[in-house]
Image 1 (spheres, rainbow, N blue to C red):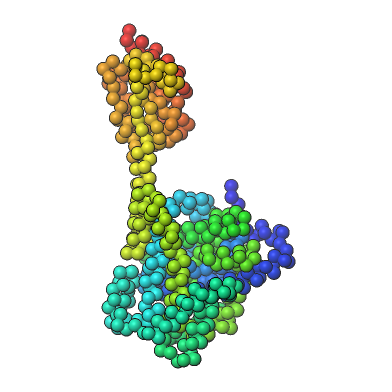
Image 2: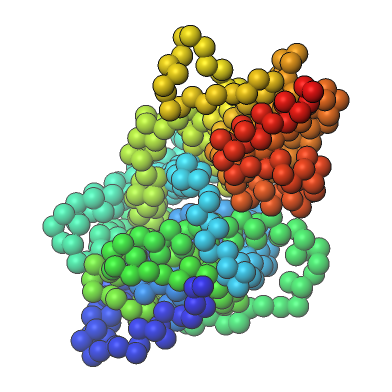
Length: 554
């Protein structure tokens, strides 16, 4: 069984000075990358820019300290931006805090209950679909700031359709100077990494565009103008007794489930990617517990939901980080930024923030994977993929995941039902090859049916397709290829047995596997048809059936 032990405590046993230096370097670089991203994602989430940094500090440190991965870097991610923005718009930051803490408790319970391996049962088409959907909603949500559009009629759109309508209604307010700054930021984001790979393009874009706006006194919205009350200094503990209101807790339950599910999926996906990069194996249940602790801690100190960030984790690995110490250093560096450099954040242009989020949306969209799945996947998988994508864009992630999982389950059951067959054996005649090893001599008065595939409720009805001849005395059911039997299928077998009794036909079961046999014994079905009517091999079953048929003919 997987250990519930943080990776930090395991790697410190063999920790070296050389690795400490590498971890410090990696942590500093990751902090530089995380700074503009954390600010941008906080703004996209509808909260103050400082909340993003608080999240990276608190959640980043706690996940590294308690986590089950060697190199996981946690913080705010794009996957949460639209969800958080919707919660804040409807229920305020207090509602978000309650939902995040509840999600944290759920994640801890999931880890303690060893649910880490269960998340792998969420189909790839669903995760691809909702990730692409989130990317589209994130992109659409940033058009306003990128183009400097002003909502003249006081619109406060939350849903994607509302945002599109508001943009169309106010398209005449586009600010050319804002567009120019946004395009400059995009140009830097695209071109800078091709020349200088060590320093992140997002940091350069922030510095350059802020300098241009300040030097030329451009009429461009900045963080300082958009958020006049940016907090400086370290965050304070922000929980209060009003959050224990049962009405508030009940109201935030669906949001908490969404946050917990998404945090679990994202963090474990990131951990799996990290494993492949460093040749390690993460502890999934410990990672869930750490994510739960981190989200409770983040919400308690003014942050937003957090999870493992694949891009920052990859940057950590590429720059030499190999232990959780790198993630802890990343948090400490961000503490220094909050203490000494936070006032400078007011100068960052909003079009630059939008450009950074455009790039984030593009990178997370996985459009190449989406297109490829549409080309090569079965039609049922394409249906799940497209449905999840559209529901995420049009409605929200909760609806998308719920419908996606139900749809995937129904289509999977249909596929399993399609491959389950109940077929009768053909007797040897002049058209068959009597020397074939695939053919068995069927005694007179005996019919043989073979069931192939799992017998569950979606396929159970096929049992009733079994038909009899006038001279049938014994029915042999071969179940060699049936590895699973549920209550509905057992009920159909019982109905078939009742029909056989009315006709004076005896049933013989051949090669019943372990799980179906346990189900039959528990229900007493083996006693009903007779324990000696269960035969391990079809040859034995046919001989036994032949004797029963002769006896019944006498």
